[in-house]
Image 1: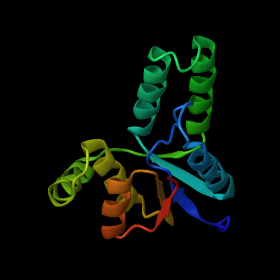
Image 2: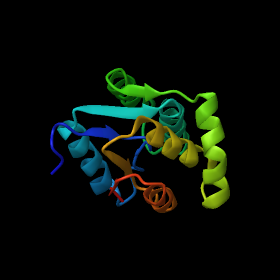
Image 3: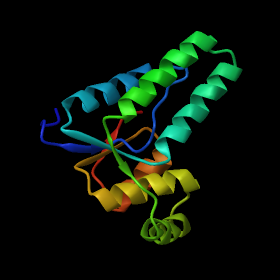
Length: 144
């Protein structure tokens, strides 16, 4: 159990495909968020979430009304979190991470943002991101 004084970097958006078996990971994220004092996301979290929701809508995984409802919930949730901006320092710091680990650019940006805000834990479900974040010195909660 995470003490309430913990600051969580929930920097990897975890939106589960309705047809997947990953719902438990989503439940873990919700539980961690409810236990946290504060949450931090990178500025790219919203575009990633909307991209995923839009893809699922195009794939007809849910109806337009469900998309609108989920989008509204995402926007409301993000209104209550701290946002890590991508600064010139973040951009400089991401280069060695990309050179050292097999990461996608956005995943590396999430890690570097987390390193900048120094959270108590970093929450992710992505194996490559988890491995690189751990090696970079972040305490990880794997919700996969």
